[in-house]
Image (cartoon, rainbow, N blue to C red):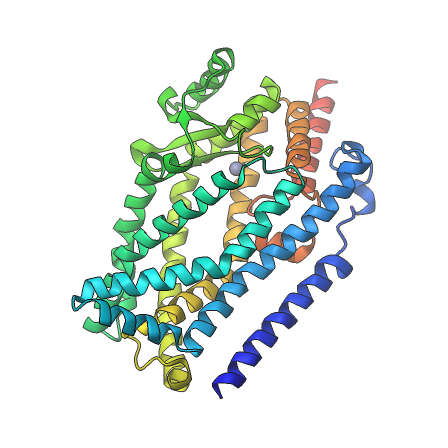
Length: 425
Ligand SMILES: [Zn+2]
């Protein structure tokens, strides 16, 4: 039975992978609808032939990797249970120490280590792909260093969360998910607060804007929206990537707007001011807080469903998966697997909300800067530097796109430009 279940799981993954290969490489059509051809949103008007070809190739492979990697995690956790690894980690932990907390720490290090090893090849392929296409310029040691930082941050976080969750499971088989959710509220807020000052600096350097002339212009814009200067940062990304980005993160006194130095180096001042105005909208409209509220709501539903599904799976297949009961630490891979499945299922919904906020930010930015030409060319540059598709296939859009597609973003700006021109006449 165990072998059969293992074979079926692998087979299901292979069929799923083949489906997406067929969907992305043969079925999906990323060409533009007729009415958009030749407009400023048409990448054929601003990319050269080589860039167009590379964009198509790169996006297809990137998208395939995206769809393969999350379900690969599910397969990994399933096989870890099925072939008794989770059981083995627990007995190694029990043999190494007689203290409960230390046992959990040892169990977690084994599980994390195997998960790291299993997912490393896909991460490496993804890294070397973006190097091949000249998106990433990061050296291998620097990439590996970041992978290891990720590993230890994940491990540290699990070390705080897992013992609490399993303690709650012991206290209340029925309602642990609700207590876990309650505790996750202050924890989430605390992590969001610490993120920009404790975690982010482990990866990159953050500092005030270097170009003082540009800084004056950017801070004038920030001032208009009542954002103090000490909330605007530049980050050094140029040694790692050619792509551009800007974002808002942190909460309370640590809330900040961050501009990648690549964005500042590659775009004109007018283009940068549009990007900045877009980020200002996220900041003043509190999109971070809306995001946290949404996350907490989804995690309430998610934890409830996880608890129900864990009970169901363990009642039916506890024997094959070698999980005697929910509150046994051996059930942890099942917990991760179900949670990850639910998150993946919910991602089209959270992306939809995010795309709505991004649309608002674009509209706010163009109203603030009134320069559609700078905005359009900035988006064209973003498309070029990231080799991103202007009009991605449907499934890619709903699962991957937290931003509207460039087709949508640029054509909205073109409409604005048209209206502006009519008004001026
Ligand atoms: Zn945005």
